[in-house]
Amino acid sequence: MIEATFFLESQSNSEEIAKKGIENLIGTIKSIEGTDIKKVDHDDTVRDGEIYSSTAETEIMFKDLGGYLMASMRCAPTSIIIDSPDRMEISSKEFLSVLGTTIALARKFLDKYNLSTRLPDIESEESKPAGQEKDEDGGDGLLTEDEIDGLVDQGALRVKIVFEKVNPKLRVLSGELKKLLEEKERLEGTKNKSKEKRIKELEDSIKNIEGEIKDAGEDLGDVETQFLNALKERAFVHRIKSVAHDYSSLVAINAFIYEPKTLVELSVKLVPVLVDVLEPEIMKLSRFDIQDIGVELASHYFEVSHLVIQRNSPS
Image 1 (cartoon, helix red, strand yellow):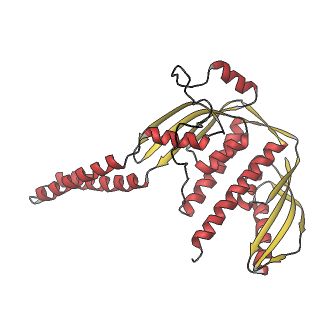
Image 2: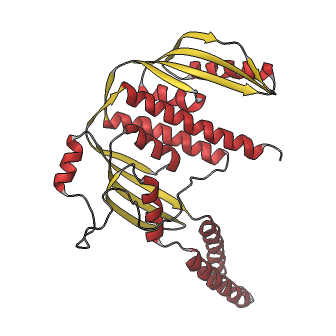
């Protein structure tokens, strides 16, 4: 069980809508399975210029970590206080199950509003993540077994994360190429006497698109660097491997992460296709770990929701 206090806020240029927004947030929390609202304290609605702000301090009992994370994402409280427990132990398998649900919601949100994950621009060799610096002898900079043991002893999570970077132009070109190839194959199987001219046209088009696909392809080293920059100062990277796949690049990273909230943050911001916690089998979360994870999710979804509102507002 997790006991938490959520500080909820709803803003609008209408006082009625601001008040209704708070009730909607409370209703959302109630709809989450295994969630029990113990107390709600409504504050007076405040007006600042043309904006009304309605707030509520809400004491909630969550049956498990999954319900707590779901509420943090869907309601984006301005602040969270964890009242209990002081410490929680959870199997890595159960944690991954909860994280999988979180990633699925993040992907659904991106798809619904036609958003995409954002990667840092490619930078110079400076300040790559720990474990990636080249040593004086030109080694690969991977962690030694002693360093790995030390990180595990200090409580770091050993994780494997597979990211996918989709190339939108390649996706369109690949779709066009597929249609042309299917039409060419279909014509070649017919006895149509006038098909040769069309087949020649298709072959020319196929050749042109294949050239465009080659030009649109990304250097895997550049894609790796982008993900390494995204992990900068957040992880000790042990291994990284990438492969081109259709119109996307897959990047697998084996790394060590000290804070569970960092793994959650990377998961909702970069929406990986696979996450695995290799060590430890049992994860220990402090009260502050639980709080930080919820605050990170709330902050991220507040920013993304604000972005969607801005994008859809008339200029």
